[in-house]
Length: 249
Image 1 (cartoon, helix red, strand yellow):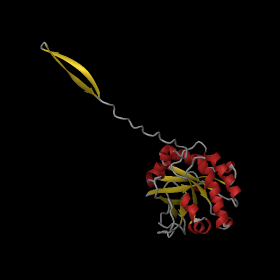
Image 2 (image 1 turned 180 degrees about the vertical axis):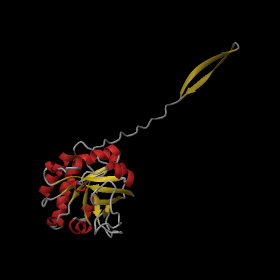
Image 3 (image 1 turned 30 degrees about the vertical axis):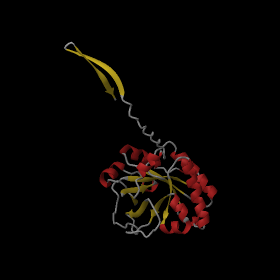
Image 4 (image 1 turned 135 degrees about the horizontal axis):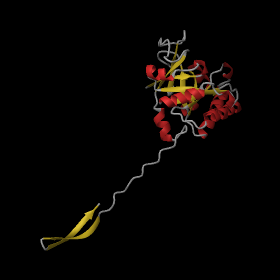
């Protein structure tokens, strides 16, 4: 299990050196942006991304959705792709769907999730869905939740979510109602901050698959052992001549 945080413009300017040193986090999930336009990039995304890279903190990102149709979700996917182009992510890219106005029934919401995820996957990304427990259970079908990486939000000491998930957002440090572990504050962050556990080794899997900006490793070529080569040799010792076969490998 790995320990992480997720952040956006709401956390302001983060002191990432302090976060890494004091909190010893293993990963961070960054908001890349929201909505249908690339111009809606999170104002802190570029800085948060470059700081994670500078300090060697593996990261993923998420795109906050306001879509109410599959076509709008495709537009959000295109905006997300424009913002994250040229970057490398060790963790998945998530479709963050949680707005009350998006409670449109399982069929429609599932199609929205699939529209976003399929677009990101076609572009070479390991993609997933983020939402809170009751939303996932009510509006995203099991097949889709099994197909893509799930980042579960459920503020509790032990989640009752029964289906597979790779990351669990379990607490909000500094929040009066949802600071489950009574963290109070994340060092280096001057605002409430979500806390996460990761249960899948996403960095290894993503790099091995050559996704999220990484190149797929070249296959190791098997070198066949060379056949033994026999050569005739002649040795002359003290005027005596000896002949025989020498095997080379």
